[in-house]
Image: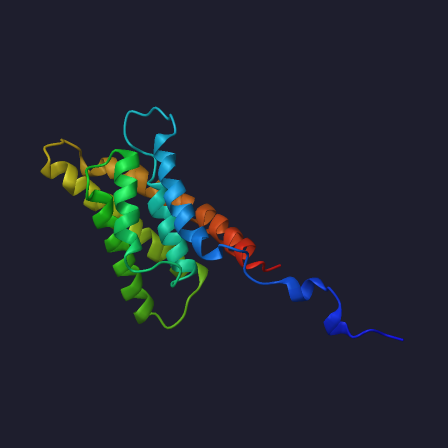
Length: 175
């Protein structure tokens, strides 16, 4: 006599989001802020803002992963942890989320190249905003100094997007 399949303890019926799955995207963005504390010595600031990269990657992967109020809070946390001027990351994170939303509404299709292009634009705009704020505060930083951080961040974005994709699959238990 055969038992009913629906009564068996198949792995198919245990699938679904892991407990606390909604907290993974914000937690990863906030934890990425601590990359700024990594003891890397450089003459110029070439290390990309990892929290911004994770925020953009999550926003492009799952547009509804964050509430609208999350960007300023994450930006303030990033400012406090990374030692930026208070409000700089608040502005850049909020700007990135707003621009990503506007681009998302206009696009009819999505592919890897267009996601990378959107991320590159958001990263470049954020770096240029940070450069302009530094100039307004009296720092004598040439515009060419932003080339390396932008290129490094844009080339690092596919790795960050892959980490986010892997984490998204794990939190939703996709196999």
